[in-house]
Image 1 (cartoon, rainbow, N blue to C red):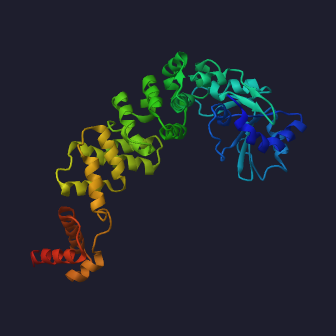
Image 2: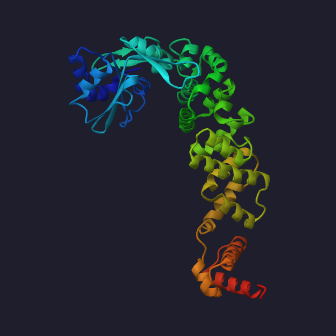
Image 3: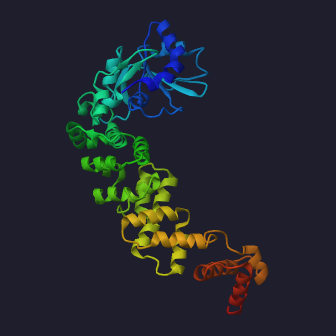
Length: 412
C-alpha cells in the first residue's frame, strides 16, 4: 500500500499547510481519500479536502483569510470551519471527540490537542488514519492499513463505545462491509445486536441518507444481510418479511437504488402501506411514490399476469415510466414467465403505446360535433380502450371508429 496517489492532493494543499505551520500548528488530511489511496482506488477530482488540526476554530479562520475565496462558520461550535478555494471545498475541523448523551440527537463535542485522540473517536480503523501535510507520513495508531489489507472491519475503540458516540455508525458498518468486501469482527456484530435500540436517537433524515448510500453502492447485498442479521434491517426499513428473501430479490434487480428499495420491500405490505412507511421515514415524495408504483405493477404481474396482448398493453400503460423497474421487481418476486421478453417485443413494435392519443380532445369535439363536457371524456376513453384492444391506430382509423361508436350511442 502506497501514499503515492495522494501526491496531487499534497501539492494542492501545500500553501494552506504552510500557513498552519507558520502559525505553529499541524494539519492532517483525513477521511475517505486516505483510505482510498491505500486501496489504490482512482482519485475522484471532485473530492472535498477533509482536514483536521490542533488549531482552534478562531485560529483556523484567521489562517484561511486571504487563502479561501469563501468561508462559512455554521459548524464552528462543533469545531468545523468550511471554505472554498476555486472549485475545491475544504472542511477543517479541530481535533475533537464527540458523543451522544442518552436520548439526545445532538453530540457533545470536546476539542483535543493530539491527532491520535481525534482518530480514536472515528468510526472504523480503516477511516481512522491521517496523513500530515504537506510532506508527512501516515498516522495509523489503530492498524487501519493492516485491516484494509486483511479485509477486516473493526472499530478503533471498543465497538460499544464507538457506536454509543454515534449510533448511525452501525449502518455505516453495513455499507463499508459491502463496499470494500470486508469481514466484520465478531465483537462488532455483537455490539450492533446489543445496541440496535440505540439507533432510535438518530434523526430519520440521517438514517435515510445512509440507507441511500448503501443502496447506491455496487453490491449492497452483504450490507443488508448484516442489517437483517443484527436486527437493524427492520428498524430502518420497517417489516420486510423474510430478510433473506429480501436480499435475494435485491441481487436480481440491477443498480437503480429506487428499484432495489422496491425489491427489498416487496413483502412489506400493500403498496399503499409501503408508501406510508417510507414517508414516515422521511423518504422523498418522489421515491415513496415511485416505490409504490413499481410494487403495484409488480404485484399485479405476479398475481394476475397478462393473458393476452391487450392485457399486456394495459399493464405496460399502467406501469408507465416504471415499466422496466416493475418487470425487474416482478421477476425477482416470482415466476412471471416471459414477461420481460414480451414487454420488450411489445414496446419495440408499438412505440406509441405510452404516448399521446392519435386524436386530441379538440379533434374529437370537431369530429363528433361535441361541446366540452362528459361526452368528450367518454369519447377519449373509448378511443383509448379501442387502442389497447386492437393495437396502433392511424388517425383515419381512429376517426372511423369514433364515428361508428357515436352511431351506436343511445339518443335522447
